[in-house]
Image (cartoon, rainbow, N blue to C red; front, side, top):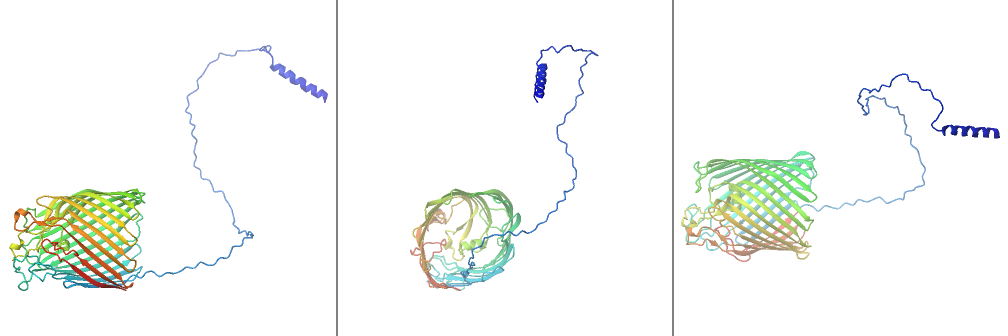
Length: 573
């Protein structure tokens, strides 16, 4: 072993010694066999991208088998009593509603309505209303100066999976007497007997058919399809028909973006059935109204366009301002609306810019003033309105809303009465309709306060500034203020007061007739209503109008009743 160790050490030392020598390695023989010639290889493009090769590989066969394995456990569930589902009766919807009352000046009131029970398949019902009153107006020629309105309606609606289909018919008959002549005038010629005032009546029928979508729109769908037909006939041979066909679509892009498209077609005719030389009007209107709805959190924005194409035809027109007998109108106007809650339920801003085009008809105008003279002129009304508002919470139970706006009117219908109406008693001197251009600046402040658990109060202040071309805003006040108080004692009774103030109005240009005053004084009056709930089925009511006994001229020369009380009962089953 020792000899092997020494031998190994010796070899190692000799090896290291050989590598540790100087540059002299001894004698080396070098032979030159030719001269060195440097060459450059041909340039080649290098591509380091990996090569892909589409090969179809056969699936690796896999065999598996699922077998149930029973695992023993010592877990024991604790026995529980089965849950009980209790049934609570839904408050029944009254199917039958009867309201009957009577008041001063031979004033009867009757209302009857029937509605079907709750059903997932259909709903139907019918109703009847009547109201009339007489006398109660002082210092007039005609003591028999009443008016009455009677109406009836039926409806039916069927519910499908996605849509509901409904139809309804309304029939209304109004009767009014032109009693508003002073004592110095004589009765009109058109009377049933000497001393009676002239009578006007309106028979109006309305038929509606519509299909309404019940479920939300997922992508694109029709949301509403309707048809409405109105027909009017008055006592002086005037006939009028108005038909409308609206259809609405919705395209839902995302949860916060929707595109709505509203289309509509309207047709109107107004003519005299006995006299071809009397004034007549007709119109056709096509409406296209696309709008995009945006929402983010509680912020909401609506942007759209309102496009109207209308053809208005006038025949035998007798007007101070000459108008073309046949005119074509086209309007396109941008619209917008926004709602910006700064602090949720505390402070919010809102605003809107809108355009409106409406056909004035005898049906719509007579609903506002029953004492319209026969054979009035009709025209369209164009309205451009801009408004901004702010609403908020003052403290819990008290909220406010402020708004200011600007309205540009074209052909605003204004009710007017000639200052010489009493000089021609042989004519029917009702209320005329003028169409004026101009602008309006409306300002409104509203405050609502819950004074106690049972008492609610609301105050509304309205101020309107008018600038009309060719006249004034006849009979329209600048100020309209109102205070409402309501007290509710649970299910026993509720009591309400409505105190209102109407500012000064101008009836006509005073320079036209200085014998009578063109100034209509401001007035304050109040209405009161009381409902006493005797049981769930029976209740009693009392209504008092004009509590302050003001003899104001509410109907432009037709004095209003100074005090009217109506009492009655309501039965629901």
